[in-house]
Length: 179
View 1 (spheres, rainbow, N blue to C red):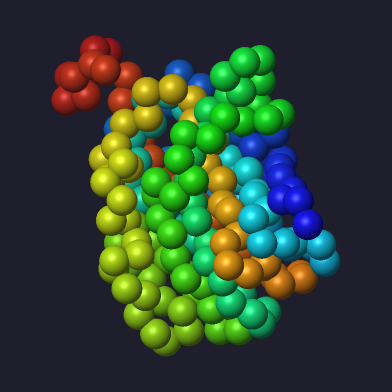
View 2 (cartoon, rainbow, N blue to C red):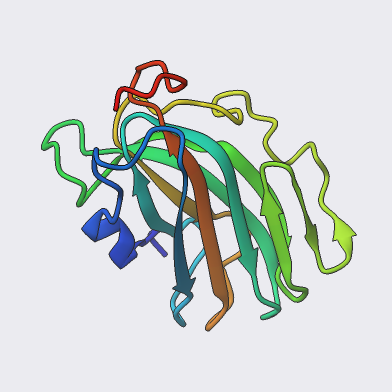
C-alpha cells in the first residue's frame, strides 16, 4: 500500500505566534492525532509548524495503549520547494528530531530529554541524539514537524499527543528592554 499523508488542522492553519510575542517567552503548541483504520507503515502525519526564529526547547509526544508496536520518526519539512505551498511539503530530514521504537500495547511518552514505554525506559540512543536539531536549535525558516510510522502501522483509534516548546529569538539582545 502506498504511503498516505495526513494533515492536522494545526498544520493546515499554521496556528503559530505572530511577531508581537515577546522574545524569550516559552510557548507551546499542542496537537492530537487519532489514527484511522487505514493507517499503514510509511504513512506520515503533518503535525504543526513553528515560525522562523523559534528556538527549540523540547518536543514531547505521548501515545496510548492501543496494541501493536513500531517506530515513530519525528522529522522536519518546509513549504514545497517548487510551489512555496504547504500542501505537499518538502522533507528536510525524516528523523532529525528523533526515531523511537514505540510499543503501543503499553502507553508511552518521549521527549528530547528521554521517555518511557509503559515502565521501560527508552534508550537515550534513540532520543535526541541526532545532532541536526539539538536543544537550542534556532529555526531559520518556517518549519513543519511531522511523524512517520516506521516498521508497523499505528493501531486503529490510537491517540498520539504532541507538544513542541520553543521561544522566539528575533535576533536582538533579549536582555535589553527597549521599552
